Structure formats: structure tokens, C-alpha cells
Image (cartoon, rainbow, N blue to C red; front, side, top):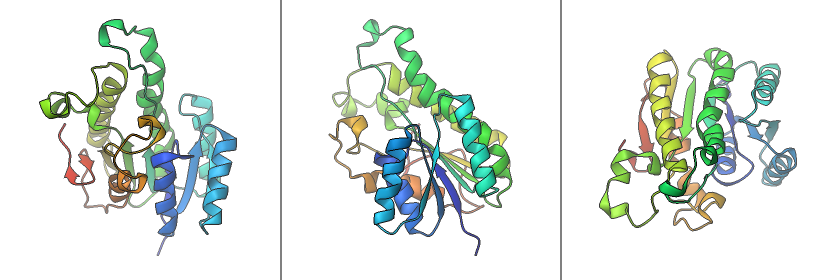
Length: 238
């Protein structure tokens, strides 16, 4: 059986690192991609102590040059890519909408929106070389119009522009890639409220629970869904 080759961005900690760990435990050939070589190397070393063989690749999703170099590295090392997980993300400003400037949103969109586009486009040739290529976009329920308008969730997170808007944009980007890329399964996943640095470790889910949807959608077959939005329970509302 051919080994599955996967790459996860923003994978030195949190959900990305846990997805890498779970993929490697399945026997997949995994590239742990992260912006910081020191933190990325440490994550690889920690996983090695668990008996998991993972390769580190430097990848800054905000840099076209860095993304291109990472794609070249994977091409030389593996020749194809079966699974791409666009996991890297940042929280952005939490100020009230009326106090948020357009300039303060640039960084969060650079990572959460433009980053997945850069990475996806750079790795498309390697994905097209695979028999069953899959792309997983790690988004959020905060990018869901249904969730944002549900009064049950209104008190959980105060209104803000950056993170929810960037994830809503990523949801639409997912749908458009799915429509355009024949033969490549492209789906968005909502990890749920998970205890990571992004939530100040306030989430009620573990990183294993939070990575459930990522792992499931990364493992679908050629007859699996595309253009969908999923959480660990199943289909998530747009």
C-alpha cells in the first residue's frame, strides 16, 4: 500500500501538532510545517521521543518565497502530496467593531485568508500528482453566519471583525476551490472550542477532540465530500 504523504501548516503546537501526531501514528509520511525553525524542530524532536518519524519544513504562510521553498522541498523529498492541511491561523484584534481600524485587520487576513491561498496554489502541482488528493481548511464556527446569528452563542464571544470575517472568507474560498479543482477533495473544518493558545486554553475540548474533524476529512476517499463544512459531530452550518 502506498504511504499517504501529508503536510500541515502552523504545526509546531496546538491543533496542527496534534494532527501531525495522529497522522504519523497512522503510518503516514508527514511534513510538520511551521514558521519558526526552533519551535518546529522542537516539535519534531518531541514527536520522535514518542516513536513518531516526522519531517520539519520551514514555512511562513505570509511569505510567497517561503511557501515556494517549502513546496520545492516537498517535491524533492516526496514527489507528491496527498493531504494538505491549511491550519496556520491567528486571532487578530478583539476590539469592538466601531473601534477596529482597517489597518489592524491586515495581519489576520494575511495569515488566515491569503496564507491558505498562497499555500494551496503553491502545492497544487504536488496534489495533482497524487491519486486521491485532499485539502483541509481549518476554519471556525465563528466564521459561520448561522452560528454568529444564533442567540445561544451571543454571550460567548463579543462582536469583533477580524477573526470571524477572516474565517467566513476562508469558508467561501474553500467552496470556490472545491468547485474549481476537479479530482481534489476540498473541505472546511471547525475544530470547535478547543484548549489552545488561540483560546487562552479556555476551550472545553482537548486538542485530540479538536483535531477529530481535521483527521476525518484528511482521510476521506475519492468518493468523499468536497465543498463541505464539518465539525467533529458531522456537517456544520454555514
